[in-house]
Image (cartoon, rainbow, N blue to C red; front, side, top):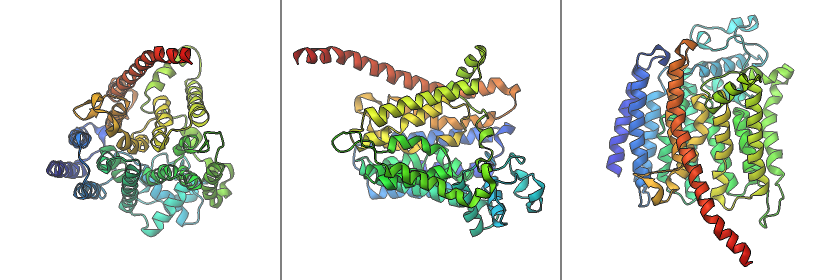
Length: 466
């Protein structure tokens, strides 16, 4: 398999080099993004297929090869100019603002108070110039620290985010081994086009979130309650979505199965999340930034789109209905996983993270490609675990393959962030992304119901015997 991985790695390296040299704004519809996207996706799928078919133990040479190419893919892209997202320019701007002793939560980039900080390289590329920053305090501290190390260097921000992403890959190998999995499955994460592009080329701050999430999962497996809360709280201070995993990773039962929540996890979580806000309290309530408005934005919705249409047809508010439905769904998930059913083993602890991630993905009305990054490490953990009777050519016929396909296809939404006259293309992009996922989820649900039906007579018989 080493030779085949080497060939695939070289082909992918050429694909990313072409991508870095030819990438244009995908909204120009010149085809450059689509061509490179599908070429890299096919090559990546073949590499994953090889890993899933692997029966023999991993070798150090193969693991080194996977990491070497992972570094190479990122090195090729790290000096390309971000075209898919302009978020990283806000990171640089917020770092510059803080270097001039200005609270980033006080003034938007378009304010007169910060006009003297504008330049011709960064400021014109910032999105939402009339809005204050949307990022939590932990992210702002990170932007300030990165900026001071290499002021105003866009590529330096890309290097740092790529470094965090690679650190997450190293932690994933440790977690795979701790759970008795083949460490070669780290390829599913390290070679993922979604991960590579979003953490390196676009330099999203999620590149710093991912190693903290992997660390939190690993700490939970090791039974380190306080460390779990610390790492998860630090991740939430960088980007808010990891808070959804707190009820899942919070140990709620003792060794005898009694309901006894470990208080150190939420207490340390709160400290890690709130302490970074101390330097910014001069902004008062302004520390929430642009967040309330951002929650109302819509982009690339899946099931939420149809729920919103139904709510609007019935005279209700789509945003409120979707929020309440998501809240109710998460409440049920947390009640079941946190209170009713303690995890049977370490594998179950991590697998349960899929439930809140999946609920958020399906019910949010604002789903950008990089919002799926936190799911990719879980794919590396659970795609290879399916039994052979479920597998067809290496890929298991279950919902994990559906989620993997979705993480591969979600980037197809980029070319369709366009005005409403392109509605038909946006609908087409949504179908390409979501339809395979729904098919696999429904297939898994049907199989689960069938198994329940087959087991029911046996359960009834056992009760009568008792």
